[in-house]
Length: 229
Image 1 (cartoon, rainbow, N blue to C red):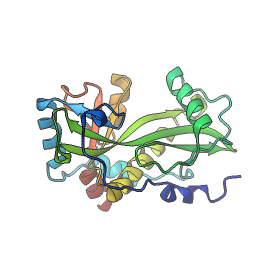
Image 2 (image 1 turned 180 degrees about the horizontal axis):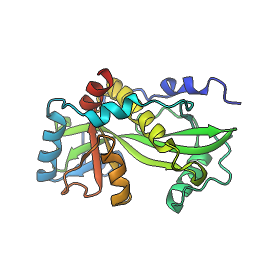
Image 3 (image 1 turned 90 degrees about the vertical axis):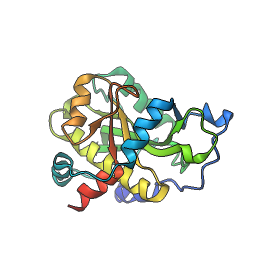
Image 4 (image 1 turned 180 degrees about the vertical axis):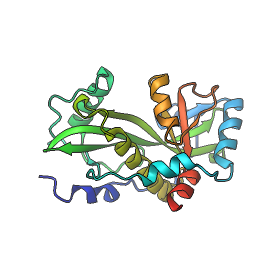
């Protein structure tokens, strides 16, 4: 039984010691995303911009459903038969379930699930990363971000607003982590133009095309502003 598991979300948030300086070895680590000079200029300007009024995001965050809050994935969760229609996403859930350990590694991936009758029907995965100027030797040329790496809904639950429920939870958790760890944005690489529209319709803005043509981004200042409205 998972009574009270939703309360684990805050407890599972990573602690945030000072990250090590960017070095040639850390530049190739999985947590860093190197950007060239043009990409860095565009991204750093995007996250430094003042909060903007975002009616789509404000409406999206306020449209709460009665679904239970997603809770951290454990090895005992029932993922049998989960099928969202994208093999990569189904396989990712199976791998995450086999590796679930409750680790609080600040740069590890954290996966959260929604249950129906003790069975997983949706999940999302997030990770704390850094956008970094490729030639950077100083930490001042790096920006911490939350990356939404996966979001999937079982076919039986699609079209019922479950994806929006999961995305809303992911956005609010990103804001919580941002407060603790100094992350400035929530970034997503959509798997298709159709999925990119899903995010744009909920208040995300397009990532500059030279960084990621299918990418979308929310600054956490915008999220904070919309959540307080």
